[in-house]
Image (cartoon, rainbow, N blue to C red):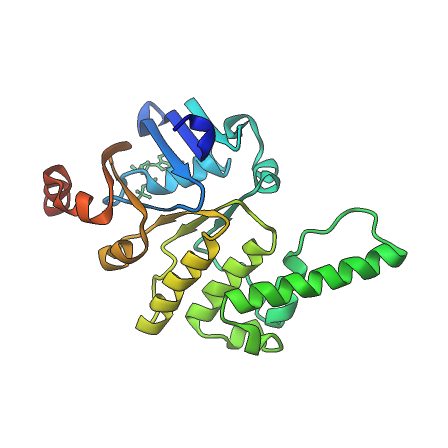
Length: 247
Ligand code: ADP
């Protein structure tokens, strides 16, 4: 396959912090409809890779192409508008607003909206909010204040607030941390729903969950790829076993 089949093509990506290469000549490719999981011990560079993709950290070298746009040359807000969504670990929901309101305020709005156009737009917003609420298992709770949701439901709402902006690539950092068993199962289902027409990159530590969701796993170690393949393949890889046993 040529590189144009990939949603994301990372090539030779390097970032130095005072001479220390947190990410070192990294290359990987994410397909359309793929769930890619990045694993690796603490300090491997996982968070830094996501920071580089979303423009929070600037690369020292290399390129990040997203649908043929060069992200390393773009600012964080431009990257969001280009279709890359990132969920951070700090919660960004408004606890005193309802589920509906949280989704509604996240809908991207144009600048000049008035008259019939505004009406049409309201309809569009309502349709999108109800589609997304359905997808994130919250359609029965649209009128509920967000701070009354369970931990897992809050995480889904945050994902919904990103989805309503229609990203083509969604990046999630430990999405099931602190979730109950049933919430984990539903989150796996949510990720499958999302990747029907998008791609997802997930940082995850829980290897059981990784095996359940990953199309492909990238194992990072000291800013480089140690192994790449299915969850089964990387778990059997001697280099991966050594790094994990050594920690
Ligand atoms: P992971 O997410 O895999 O635990 P990180 O990407 O957070 O790893 O960090 C990789 C390495 O880069 C670590 O050694 C960390 O201390 C270092 N690092 C990350 N961000 C910075 C920064 N802004 N300045 C200096 N060092 C950093």
